[in-house]
Image (cartoon, rainbow, N blue to C red; front, side):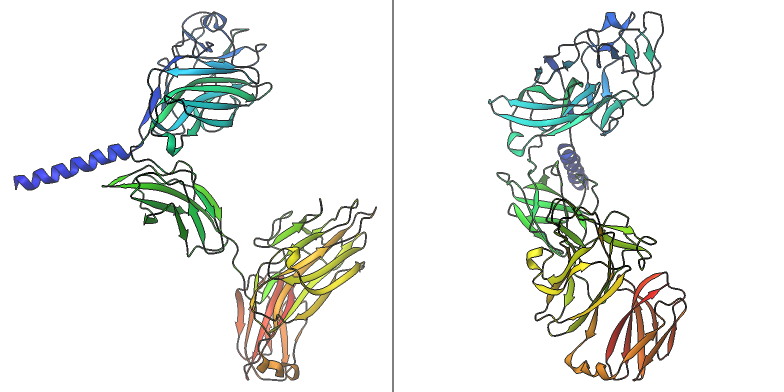
Length: 580
């Protein structure tokens, strides 16, 4: 019994020890040299006597202050930096910074572009990530940060942004007030000013090296004054995390992930999520046992954004931290089936529908959705339009979603079109990719669209091979002094003939009326009707009926719909109608 208890206790101790080794270990770096300014008022006396320079423009002369500060008028602040100089991050749990003595130089202050300074430390640690404690007075700044290791190698972080000390995000501390070196007036605040934590990910190859010093050079920010107050770090795990995670070969349902291999790795693990919440050490991996520095992700959902992290499994129950930086990628849109309908009514103005696309070959002429109702007769709701440049020839395409079409089957393409103010040139074509070079199947070329109201165009197309097709609408209006617009609406693709057997449809005519309709839609057919279905623009069935000569469509919202009529002999026809 005692032996069992002892083994259990040893097992528990092993687990606790492993958790301690695997958890992120935050440490502060004690700066021994490199600070050039005292920017924190403390003790008793005027702010100008307890500091050497200002955080912002010297004309204002504001500096930080400690909670133990009392100005020359005997007034103490209600907010300030901790008297101990220890800052526990308000953004990252477990991370802290130790500021230098408030009575001596406690900051590296860089005023002009090109100014720099090097900070040395009391220790030479190995780190997986560094955090710089800094802020910028009188505007934002940017810096190049050069980390030098004891073996003489370096790692550079270029153009690292540092926010202005008022209003920025990712702060280590905020609401600490300030005092003027000019007037000695104290400003108390619960929200500003702020000092920020700037993360710097050490590459996997450098996590085995000891840090010697860090050089900071101001590279951007004409008015901003860059102030660095210290560094902290995450102790490098003996099991090194991979880096340079990347996604490639992205399709609607798959993607390839790759990363830098880690020497001595037993295997790798992947965590995949549709949120950007980073995994913890206890998070169950999505994939494990990956022996190479690449893997294929399959069975992904179309048109979805994924975030991925990778970690190293060193064997023996030891794993690295998850990669400090995730990779984010979006799968391509999946193809849709007929009937396809796009009336743009659910699309936000000045955008285009999800999974549609545009190609602006000229320098201007973007496509966007807007309600042209009341401006151009015949258009009563959202449409998609383009205003081509009048200084050069237009060449801009709008493409539908990818649509699954079958070889030898005839389909009906229908759309409403019109122009505003000046004539427009429109070409309609289709192909297997949403690019102009793929639009090899011409439907029609409208040399000059110049009509007083919206018009409906209907065409029958029959693909010679099965595949995913995109319908393209090209505005190629020649340069003109007149500025006009090309407008499209109610683009639909429906089945004209489902198979060669259904050619009998030409003798079994189905008609519907009225169209547009507000309440009852009447159906007239030479054959007995066995079933009717109504689809919305997404292809979802919204109404269905058996044998009937009319359907009550009053519950439907305004918009375009497709009616599918199936006759007793199995033939099917589709019909577009507008619910008003």
